[in-house]
Image (cartoon, rainbow, N blue to C red; front, side, top):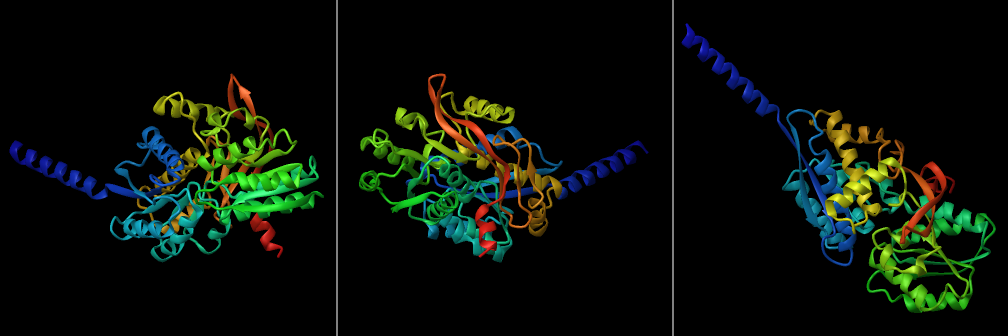
Length: 397
């Protein structure tokens, strides 16, 4: 009898173990970033944000559920490569989610794939706004350029009469230019010139010389962050535009937190509107910056791309938890439309249920010295929940 009881007990334990194994679920996340090419530094920010989130929150999942992050290099602004590696992740690796991307053209290239395969994609950075219109399986937790450029134009019109715009020549640059010009003109300002700078190997000196000759009160700038931001700032300094009385303003990309120390004192006084600054004293941000520096070194400062990666992973984990690991693409998209974070380093933000785009706080920032180091100091909150103004403007057309 004892032997039979033990046999029955053993069979029961085995059955329960097998049931547990059957219920175990691995959720696969395809992560696309730029590990090579001109945007490797920005891609590194995304990578660091993902790894930090996974280290701190990777175990915060339902019982029996685990996450596998499968990483691929898109090699920079390369839509063909982006499409190929995304297709491999969907077909061969059978991922449940796609996320990442520094570059808007890469995001645009995979939009049809996400629709056809019904694989949700969450943008960590790529900010081109119009991509989202016909991509029902895409959502964004980063930002759009109009969210910062349009209110900056409104603010600038109260201080300056004449502006010159200088933006990178691709979709986000065009959108930033469009948003700033609309806001500046609505406030009574005059645009005295506009220039679009090539993405590949830009020489900023000729463009800055053209701006200097036009004698505007202010330059509105946009570039895709990283080394382009430092290059544009150097040209601004080399041609003595500050001494000519020409102020420099723009989206947060022109003075990214991770590049700021290398720009030198010429960056002092540069004013931007953006959704994040590493110098913010929000408790959630102070905790994030401390964790980032503990993990990667005290000389490493997280930029907005690291925050975008952190928040994208949080949105994905939310969708996984709400479905107990058994993720369905349509349920995922419905859940993402309800996503709201009150613990992000940027402050409270959410996803617009109508457009699947981000609703961001936006801050007016000025580069100042804090404890001997350059920092983007938030001096005013432009708005706590700004929808993409471009989509609002498009509705009126």
